[in-house]
Image: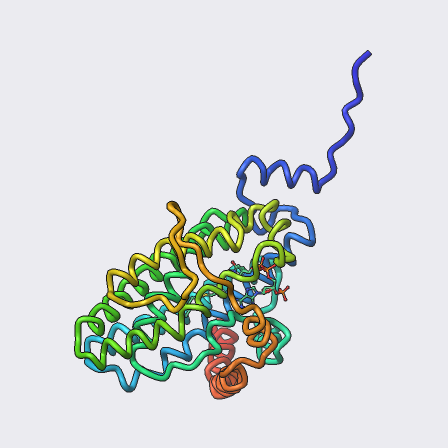
Length: 309
Ligand code: FAQ
């Protein structure tokens, strides 16, 4: 007698493909939850890139030299480009770009907490490149192996550009640290203010991260929030030491294998995520105004597209 093999459900077949490291492409069948999770993450990521233009954009007119200004303009433009690749990736899942932007503008979709802190000195621009882009790379390199093809391919290009951003930030930090005593103090002050928010970029601890387990099973996330945060701390503490700066964590210790951080202030993270951080309102106001000011560009592009259809 031949054994009856129960038919596999589409969900099981999909999971088999993921487990075999197969890439999912836009026209392939996928569970609704997989699609929703990707749209949520990719949209938040896209929003972070375009809101992330503001803290550094604030310093373009005050960059200390022509060379620094050229680098900064290129970097901020790159972030706009990253937003566009990501909105494009979300569209391949059936999302509507105007709706996503509306969700951002009305506070119904999140963007990274890190961009709600002010940039009060030039050293903050250096610290963002070094720490924020450094954290972004640590989080995004594994996303180049994400199971969803268009997101993975967008990340490959984004990571190349982020790596230039991180290097220019570290180099600017190095210049400040080898400069006058005032410049060194500016660099330390920037590290003091950006260190903890950078660690928060990786998201809540694993035991408080509602999406991680499913996202890892679906091959969207390849490592947990805490694993990536630990990699970032291990990579960055020696860089701070090389710069002659002190990481603002009195509990930081070496356990023979890793740099172990003190406790993160998750109340601050929740406050900023809720919309009550130092710059949340200003960032959204500025974004909405930029969108409204750009209406004529969208209208002109639509009219041109109509004429050449
Ligand atoms: N800020 O269950 P999890 C950049 C939310 S790009 C705000 O762990 P998940 C480039 C999370 O969305 C920076 N919200 O969620 C640049 C969820 O909310 P929901 C952005 C956060 O998705 C550099 C809830 O908490 N990068 O920096 C944050 O599995 C310089 C529960 O959390 C990306 O978006 C946060 N920090 O893991 C630009 C990378 N953390 O949806 C300009 C892609 C968590 O339930 C200048 N995204 N939340 O309402 C990811 O890898 C993931 O989405 C995580 C969160 C790891 C961020």
